[in-house]
Amino acid sequence: MKKTILPLFLFMCLLGAGLLSFKPKDKRPNILILFSDDHALQGISAYGSPYIKTPNIDRLAKEGALYQNMFCTNSLCAPSRATLLTGKFSHKNGHRDNSTQFNAGQNMYPKYLQAAGYQTSWIGKWHLQATPQYFDYWSVVPGQGAYYNPDFNEMGSKTVRHEGYATDVITNKALKWLSSDRDDSKPFCLVIGHKCPHRNWLPDTGDLRAFDNVKFQLPKTFYDNYEGRIAAKRQDMTVTKTMRLKEDLKVGAENDEFVKRMNPAQRKAWLAYYDQVTADFKKQNLTGRALDEWKYQRYMQDYLGTLRSLDRNVGRVLDYLDKTGLAENTIVIYSSDQGFYLGEHGWFDKRFMYEESHHMPMLIRYPKRIKPGTIDRAIHNNTDFAPTILQEAGLKVPADMQGQSFFSKTPRKSTYYHYYEYPAEHSVQAHFGIRTDRYKLIRFYKDGDYWELYDLKTDPDELKNQYENPAYKTIQKQLLADLKKVIKQYEDTEATEILQKEGI
Image 1: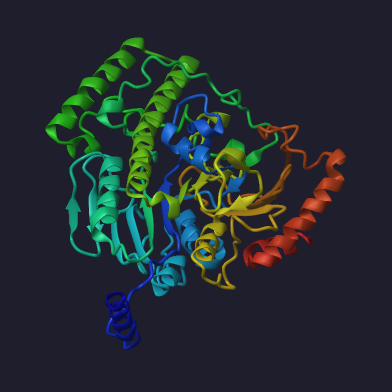
Image 2 (image 1 turned 60 degrees about the vertical axis):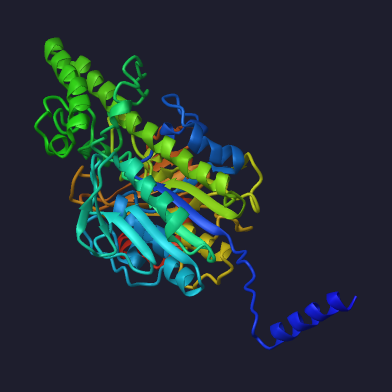
């Protein structure tokens, strides 16, 4: 009996004297964000894609939640990332377009996490014209990055080229950080930023022929005439006219810069495929609609080809979390900076407040909080990332963040949008607006001032502008009142001035 009591007595004395210390395991959740670039909802099978199966991204829906109404607030690459970090609209975080200088020293969610003992990291595509701050580790591709043998800037050191396909390389670096470089006594927040599937859509060599035998059905709005929609008619982002044969569709691109950076094995596989594509194209001598539809098929083959690698690498990350036991206490978020057009209205790219680019994919797995197979139909937008992350980490959400938690018990009745980059590439006119669960009101400006109103229940493809329709007068009046309210709430002075000049 004495042999048992004495060691226990000594143990308690030493512990009380501070000579022994035991740090309890930090139970706060890890946070892992998989953030791609230009991933259309139509390119995810969990969202009902008719084009591709994405079993690994779909796992997040099966094991967590699929968000049906997640929207961006400014459908453009860099501004969307700025909103992810700050929880603020573009007019508040200062990053309105792709050319604006981002203030990376402003208050952002990684700053608060880092101060609270989280280990923070960003690996892959960053695409903000500023050096990352508030990250314990970062390794990012310059600008848009390259699909093949990408360069990385690691913690401000010289740029280093890594051999391989971008999606694989980024995932390799992320898994290395997770497995051997981080401090596993701390919770972590890691963003894995993928280049894929951004233009100019270069699939990995093993995916080049994946869709050769598939005939993609044209979207029913592919030959849209844009009747009653001035901005839609003025844009420059059509598959038929804007898409480039060489740079985008790789016809005769054997001497392009992206081919020159390939290693011999990559180049051999690449040229074996695209030399034949070029030869077949020239032999067909296509014109008119036959040429238009050939472009669409090539675009889809390449765009979806890049998604195969993306989905595989999402699977690699999920498998690692499962294998190591991290999955149970890790919030995994898959999203993209905005949606994208896969031929709808004849377009590629994004920018418009219309559904295909306004809508963002979002899937979240968090076993402690979300039941498998959950479908969330509440309205969310990308100002909500930062408040959600901070709240789930047990931190107070700063008052100047304009979003709210994805788990809020008071869901939004609408979401606000403001796009600025005009005149610029693709000629999409500046506009702002509001979307409810059924209606959308948009104000275009800078090149003529005009309004559009859509009833998404009766017109989900947004083909008929109802703004001048007397039958929608009551709806129009209510939407205008709601728009003024959110503009005031979010302190968008530019939009306020535009409406005041019109006497609204």
